[in-house]
Length: 119
Ligand SMILES: [Zn+2]
Image (cartoon, rainbow, N blue to C red):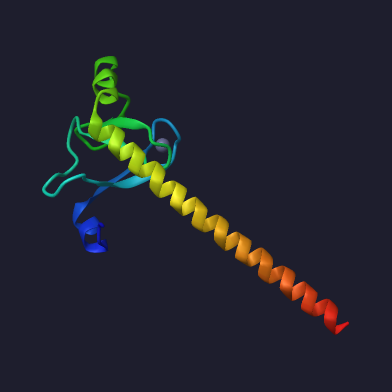
């Protein structure tokens, strides 16, 4: 389990507003997969919003991978693991959001019934 402090230690603010080349979401930080690692030229960037894999330029903006880099990325067990972790995290987040919406709907229904009971 990753603690908040561990996540903070692994996260680098890029001081750049990077736009994902696939989904257009803006990021200004990157989280390393191991201690002591910081984003630099030619490191991979995986967009947490859409899962698109891009490459950091020297100035920490992003570019599309070349064809050769795409082949290498698709063969990477680490990339597959991170993408699976991303999916599992998003699935859990969506399930929690669904549970909260359902609770709010039930509370609103109970409130309407109580209001009708008073009339
Ligand atoms: Zn994206």
